[in-house]
Image 1 (cartoon, helix red, strand yellow):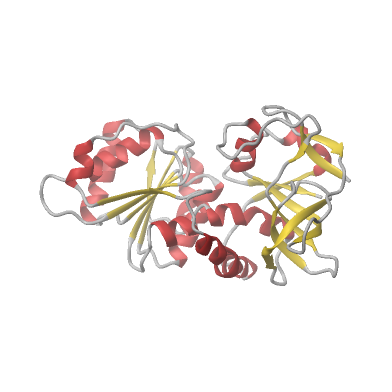
Image 2 (image 1 turned 90 degrees about the horizontal axis):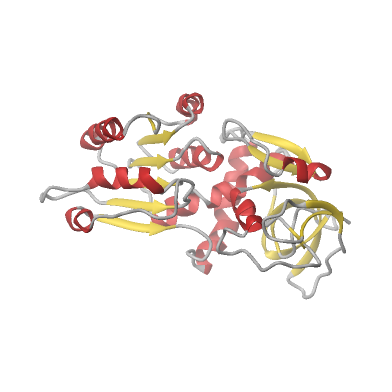
Length: 323
């Protein structure tokens, strides 16, 4: 079969011939792959920078962590891969599989799951979002940030504040449900002043952070209390596009009712992952099939994987490999 194969961490994936995987037990099933999204997670694993990266394999490793494909009986499913999924065939887990609704494009479904997991899991299980709450999304111009806006709105957020650097995309986020936009291109003093005023008028209940780094330090600084009672803020780190390390003053932790947590691989419980596949993903796929969730994608053929791997995808689109 043809597949996207990596032989050494840090190298670009190659379009190559690779042995078809074989099911080893009754929980594994082979699917014919139709579409796979290229995510920041996949890029981090290939580069060796993600904590789940494996050691080099001289025989090659097929990349990709999930896929849209067909079972032997023709049923169309989304599934998590056991083998790499950017290939003509992939092994998937029967208990991590979702049958797809009618009327939704394979490429759109392929683009969604990583972003849904990176937003809905944080909102539901780490932040415990309730209807009527105010949500700040730090780094909302990316694909997952755009998905987070729509899911937060679906979960009943009263007000959604977003940050980002891409001015054009920031303005477009208002159409997805954002209520306030804050540019990360302005100086620190202006950023703090703008966010402080918003927080004063409508206290921020939840921060969903895809950037970390300096912007996280600024956001945490505006949450700092002055000795009076403070509203509870649940701050959830999902990504670290702006840096992995921050300085955090202990006085911030002591002066505000702050819950600081992370959402990602290894932080979720088995029960939460089970709910992702049984409830959350089916619900989001159905919303997308009804055009209630907007998804921006750009397609690329499997044969062009090496050329397109590091391609710039504008305006928060997600690159989807068409197989």
